[in-house]
Image (cartoon, rainbow, N blue to C red):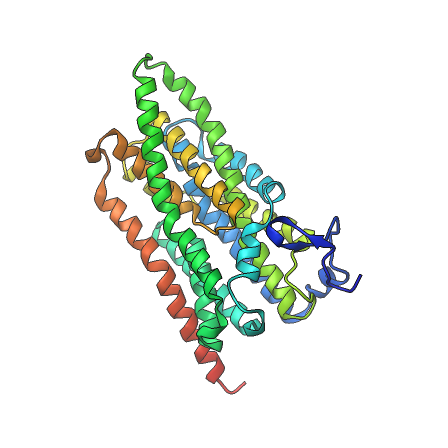
Length: 358
């Protein structure tokens, strides 16, 4: 077998080395020079993704009083670690092989995309806003390659698929949250308040499923970055995600998740409306269905967006006045602004660096 060649097709057509932890000498080569720097940035992005999104995953679990923050984060982190190994690599295939034309990629493009996406995530955390790491990455990656190589570097079909996934996911999150809550309200009205105990226990289960779904979808974004890095540097001859990259991406995401950001828990779990166990159960369950479904179809969605939309949908199903709409509008604005803002920043930075005399 030629160095860097995949042993066979993996999930959704993605080439993965069958049962191998390395692609020949790739694991060692990737630890040197500029490749090591870009690999470190990719893993830092994965860590910050987990750190920022952790609050979104456990917000309803904590705010409803079902679990303490640290317990919730550690439980969900274990599920995050397992997710990437259980449900395939369709999202990584979409981002790594279907969005950007390989010939247009370069270390500069990848470096600019990572710096902008990471910087945006740190800024959002500092402001306590549940912005989307996925939007930031897609915007920065597309913007960087357009700034460096023009619009022809982007694959239209891949851009359409990614755009539809990012656009439709929060809509589906809202609708599924609304429908599940209406169903649960009709069922729960026949029971005494003791039914809250059932919802609390169910909430732990839905939180684990949501964390599995998030780990599946979001770790694959870091996996795609590593696969692109190996391809750019000529260490593989086609887009490939070796098993060590899956393990590294999953570990970075889970570590960030375990250390989680508490600030966003208050925004999603308290400021929108007062969450009870039934709200948490419905929001987590409906969001998990949307995120996992998207991952299996290869759609890179924002879990923060989906869970936020599901929380709003659940509250609206009980009564519209329950939702603090000014807070919801602030969250929505952060989501809407992220993708175009990171695209413009990355395009400008890439163009500027190309003009510099080095």
